Image (cartoon, rainbow, N blue to C red; front, top):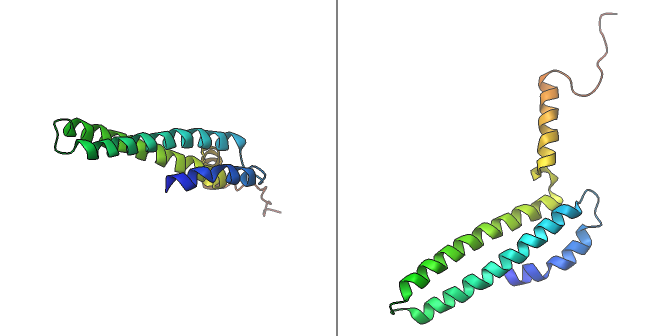
Amino acid sequence: AALPVFFSGEGAEEVAENLPGVSENIIEKHESIAKLAMASVIIAAVAAIGGLFTAGRQLARPVKAATTVLVAITGILMAETAHLGGQIRHTEISSGFLASAEAEAENEAAGNDGEEKEDDDD
């Protein structure tokens, strides 16, 4: 499943980079981690295939342990890739949005919603 998603990335980038509010910086971070995640998928797959050939042999236990570690690393890289990909169009999960949302919440808590209020004492 990772291969079609990975290879569709360039086309998606061409569309996304022309949309308003999309940061080229986030796209580049997403692309970099996606390449690393894809390499990790391939390495984990090769290790898993190697595990099939070592089944029942003395080498099986270390290969199984290494494969487990590689799969865990791959999962973490995939999660980070998805998180960065989400930030491309969902600005509410980016840190800049959180900072402005927190500031807005503080203003509302202080009774200042950003608009000047009229005095009713006249």
